[in-house]
Length: 293
Image 1 (cartoon, rainbow, N blue to C red):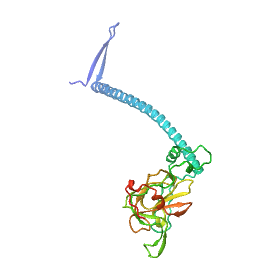
Image 2: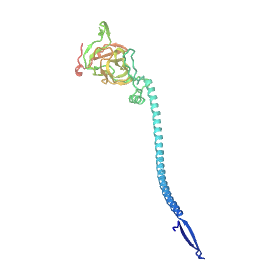
Image 3: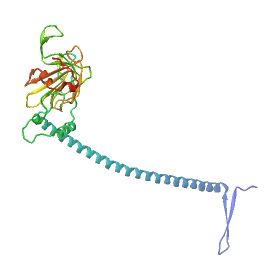
Image 4: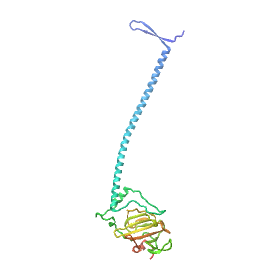
């Protein structure tokens, strides 16, 4: 007969008594199963603990990097705030100096009719400060910036062209009646560079009705100013210091114009005078220009 249990014999070490224990087969199977499960559980625990240690180490490393990045971010933000404060201070200083010396750095558009163009430029405190810093202001307090400019009398031709329409009375090309021409028209192809005829400060640059795109330059205490009209491009801004021979724009046909040319005016205390007497003083032959009497 097959037995479904094991017999374990235990002997007493002193008295020699024997004792038999009957252990069922299923009990041994259960014990072995428990041992195997315990081993598997132990291995899983050790593996999980190892992975947890790795994640903790990685977390600590990331936290250290986060702290370093946060410190760097705070430092950069402090620098940006400091720079913003400095820029604002420079902008206030530049504006105060601009007001004191009558220098305008903003472009102002002008034009009331349909189709007129308005040109504007974004105010930049740093550029305005650099501009003001580059100017050598006179040592005398209250002296105008125009007082220290040299070469303030128009003495060169703004474009190498022929005088197509003189100063004074003429037949209006649009309605055919008589009219007064406040300047002279110089022949110039569209895009021809137009230069300032004397040192000065740009008083206005932008669209002005029938003049189209124009630049006006004041030349100092002598009361002279010059106007360059019908331009296709403008390279000057109000308040900019201009030297004789510096390009202020390109000739064109904007405004009330029949073809590409340059309308050039010379004004004395706001009154238009004949520009030809100033052009006549220039070295026309050296400049390669052809002038009409």
